[in-house]
Image 1 (cartoon, rainbow, N blue to C red):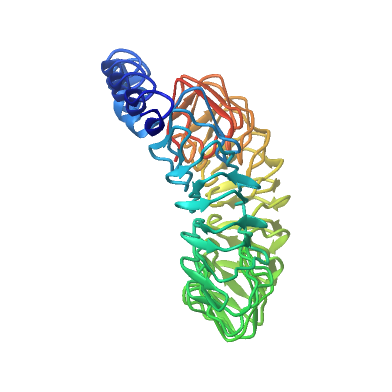
Image 2 (cartoon, rainbow, N blue to C red; image 1 turned 30 degrees about the horizontal axis):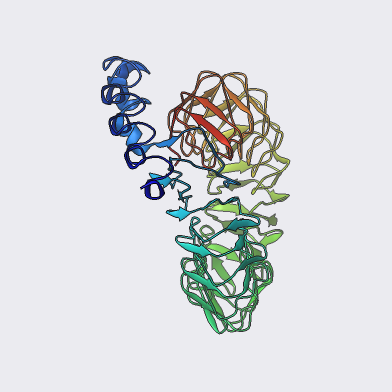
Amino acid sequence: MASANGDSSGQAARGGYGSGQAARGGYGSGQAARGGYGSGQAARGGYGSGQAARGGYGSGQAARGAIRLSYATLTLAVFPAIRLSYATLTLDVFPATRLSYATLTLAVFPATRLSYATLTLAVFPATRLSYATLTLAVFPATRLSYATLTLAVFPATRLSYATLTLAVFPATRLSYATLTLAVFPATRLRYATLTLAVFPAARLSYATLTLAVFPAARLSYATLTLAVFPAARLSYATLTLAVFPATRLSYATLTLAVFPATRLSYATLTLAVFPAARLSYATLTLAVFPATRLSYATLTLAVFPAARLSYATLTLAVFPAARLSYATLTLAVFPAARLRYATLTLAVFPAARLSYATLTLAVFPATRLSYATLTLAVFPATRLRYATLTLAVFPATRLSYATLTLAVFPATRLRYATLTLAVFPATRLSYATLTLAVFPAARLSYATLTLAVFPATRLSYATLTLAVFPATRLSYATLTLAVFPATRLSYTTLTLAVFPATRLSYATLTLA
């Protein structure tokens, strides 16, 4: 019984930490769970009354859809050494995941079993899984026998007689192989079926590669390097990324998020994007770039570093109808991409106007926006006055009287602040409403926000709603997002997307 339900008795395992009744109702009695911390009526208005329970912390429903972490340290952004004893992890993913020395379900990892294991997602660099089934956002039911998994790409990950299923790689078989996802730069697959988020059942070694994308892409004696495939050579191949469905590249050098300098000879490229984009003096439509015209050009997506667009309308997943006049576009980043009187609409940046500016997306380190409205995948209508925007991070981005709306942060006001996105380490928000991809309407009073992680972010009487954290209340708390390493939540509902080493004492975790 103990092995089946965890360290505790069968009854405790079924109900949670306490008796079956407490488990059904929440932390306390069934009645309290239904009503919340206090009486039923107060629930409607706040933490107390029962009515609030429906929208508060304590209701049974919240308990059912929430995670119970008793004295646990959760480290998502990759779970480096995550130990969940008698816990139900629900990431964006992890909905009702049961861990009793347990079943981890990341955004991915649904039903992943870690027996005395140290899982390190944000890529799993050298993650050891002893007799385990790894299911990343992907890796559903991936079996790693005495293996070292390194996701954020798996650079040189060795899978001995294993079935790798990334967000993608569902049931990918790697026999004595070194998998390097975050792209697979020069990953050699010998007699293997690679299924990335994408690559579902892609056969490599005289194979059909199907990335999230690359469905049925044939690689003849090739070295595929996804997170980009820098210099991935496709001889007479039909490449269909998660995108580029049926994109024709005639004697072209395609460099997707990746694919920098990928040569496609008489090939059909279909990214997750580029559905039916015809290239050969063509119209490129990425997941994004729909109808983007490239005249004698070398496209480098996840990136497009120095991609030249001659009188073209670039529409990325984003950049729909963004006009680039004699410009060098560098997406996954756009480091120093010059936009002359242009309207940039990234997956985000819809109609963002850049006057004589240097745009650097996947980050925008030191991007200058003069009286512009930046709308990232996020930042819709964000006004940057004489500012240096650095997206994939925005380290030290100054926003003067601005409304920042990230993929998240919609209408977040930053007064004389230094925003650092892909993380926002030490971002100061004065009287602001932070709404991350998540954090909708999260109020930060004199706080230092550090996103891609928010290590040690202080939230005073705030409602944090991450991509997760919808309406999470943090009272005098230090929130560390892209993970919340060591975030302490007292009587809180924490829902990270990661929570590396997050301590939840009497908490209801509801990630995504």
